[in-house]
Length: 122
Image 1 (cartoon, one colour):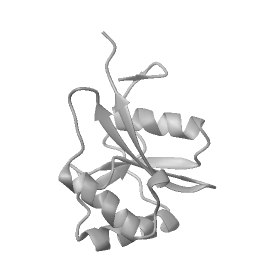
Image 2 (cartoon, helix red, strand yellow; image 1 turned 60 degrees about the vertical axis):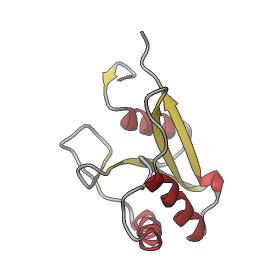
Image 3 (tube, one colour; image 1 turned 120 degrees about the vertical axis):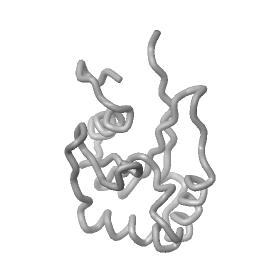
Image 4 (tube, rainbow, N blue to C red; image 1 turned 60 degrees about the horizontal axis):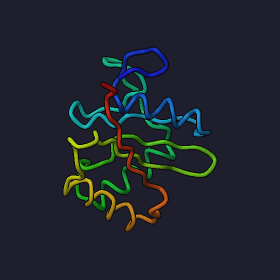
C-alpha cells in the first residue's frame, strides 16, 4: 500500500491514520511473528504498561493471544482495537470473534472496536 507516498502494510497505514485522528499511538499486532510493530519489519516495539495490562487481561479470558485484532490504538479516550480486512478477499475469523467476546467480558465496549475495510486502487 501507499501511505503518504511511502510503501507499507495496511496495518501500518491504519496506524498513520489513527494518529492523524487524535490517538496518542498505536501498534500492529503481528500475530504471525508474535510481536508488536509500529514501523516496517524488522522493527518491533512494546506496549505501554496500561495497554499491555488490557491486552493480557483479554488474552487470559480468551485462553490465548490468537485472535487479537490487527491494530491496538490508545489515547485520552481509551484503547481501541481495529481489524483490517481487504475488501472482497478477507472476512472475520472465529478467533477474532472470540477475541471480541473476551474483550467484552474484560470490560471493553463495542465502541472500542472497529473494522477497517481496504482495497487496492486499480
